Length: 242
Image 1: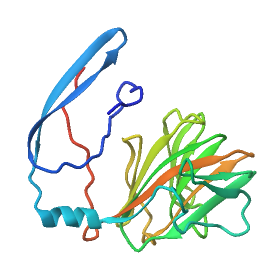
Image 2: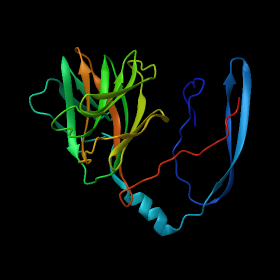
Image 3: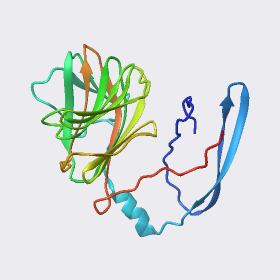
Image 4: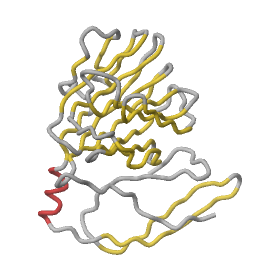
């Protein structure tokens, strides 16, 4: 698989499934300035029993690639902006707004992970992970020219510089657990187990945008349910190489 340009200290996060266990080699190839680089790491994959594979598959609450429907997303009544589905590109778009706009839905889970691929052409795009039909309080914002901001409680904002650029696709992951939230953008963990101030996740999630007239696009949204009220989606740990 090919990846975008990686900055110093940035993590590469790749997700996939394998049919059988065994010993394998992970090889990374690329260019550092004018020098070609090739690194290889040994990996051991455990052999998964059939029932284990079924359990993993069952953790997906839904996967909406916006190919031919919006999957039940509801624009919040009274908010500006027009929501449209492009069935050719499989992109769900909000446009024509001057302010905040969001679409929401409810998932049947108390611990869940939201994954989406998004880009925007103006000031800000967002993923709301709780109370999306009521407010913007619990959200993750991608802000042009700034970074990624998490709001995990009223008046509590956690901002991380990331160099967000309008018009670029970003993979956003929000893990909502029992009273905590963790965020990733392009596989880089930006917020780790931030407390939700005693709030219980309600499964009302949303996607949206903010700013003077522009558009925000969502290529897909996937929601995974936590297993037994918890989850562990940790990337493979590799030794750092200078």
